[in-house]
Picture 1 (tube, rainbow, N blue to C red):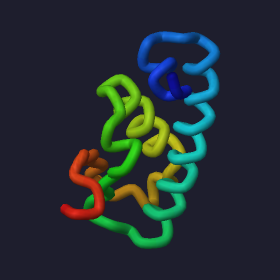
Picture 2: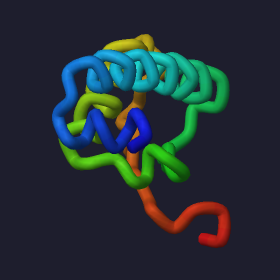
Picture 3: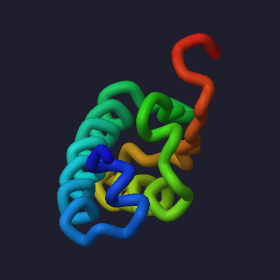
Length: 85
């Protein structure tokens, strides 16, 4: 079983490891929002498959990191469609 699957199943060690992934993705998204000032940020790939609790953690952390001067109601959405969307 891979780390993500273990984390979804509630393994506390895997959850702790995955928290680092959420933090790294949040930091990357913060810079994208700061640099590009988009109306919408759509996260796909592994993040598109996240359970709702992780999506909420990621969305919340991004909003905490973005400077309020650059965060003008950016919609943060997730999709499972991948690159073919």
